[in-house]
Image (tube, rainbow, N blue to C red):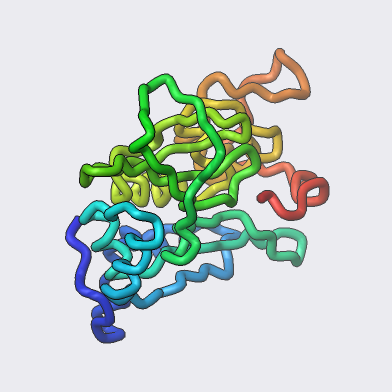
Length: 234
């Protein structure tokens, strides 16, 4: 993806975000009950801010990441679901602003071999069992996006920041979507949300925890009790 230069006019900015989000707002608005869509159309970083970040962390940002931050200082797109006269936050798509692109200093485990030149920077912490990080190899212009579990295990999600953004939109920012992408186990509550909002993303092995004899969750039938027991799905 080619990102435009920072601080273009408002009309171009709106067009850019519609393109950046693949016009996801139009699709979400077509789903009954989805309300309060909020897309934060951020201005891009100044070049000086990027240079300061690189000096602070003693590492160069890959061109793709740098171009993203020049066009938009982070990313935030949220939506809610209205049920029983209440709006509940469900979807959240987020990439940290530059000042929150902070290093991970704890050790991590991975099936791939990484040496001391590998650095991790936090992109998003809005997940129940881990966070999403940007992996940069010092001395190269390569980067990739990974899920860092609470146990310190690293799992690759996407080969680039652009690919990660596309995946985030595909999953509509549903809770713990990296776990679905990595075929890991979700909570009962989140399985309900996927069965309702995105049955095409539901894992075929997901079964109701109420009984082993039941088939997979019914499509587009939502158990309202999940919002009573878990008012903030995140």
